[in-house]
Length: 197
Image (tube, rainbow, N blue to C red; front, side, top):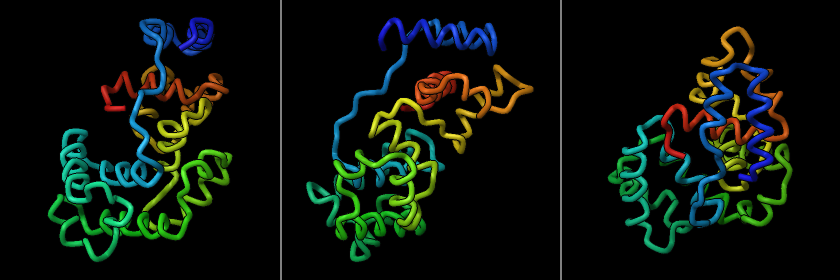
């Protein structure tokens, strides 16, 4: 993170609470580096990790990758439901992964095109896929597209983090003070929660 941007976030946090200011001042934060395996891999991994611990998500995803080999896009289909179940996925997650595979096959998940969309257009495209909701769209916008001003209102860790510092204010209103850098505020909240990013 640019030092000037870090100072700016510290100054904004001072208007929320001294505790938040201290948390942000403790260390700068930036988007984690990840290998780019395409939108399909990001979405599939995000679905795999929903509502399970970080350790369980990593284990299940490792099994999916091992089973798929170099052909993840082709692997995510109804013909492989039994194998996906053996990887540890629930019926609904398998259904979502197969729909992601079908969307990719239909040409709807071109990485460059998805990155070029604005947030509304991207969300409209992705939420047409069964099993993809706004939370997944927000995770893709933050961690894959690395957009600076996404506030994931549906993420419990982020909302709880803000409530810890501003109990009597609505989290979205507190976050609005950090625009156009709300994604960075979310990263701080995840770090505070000890969540894997």
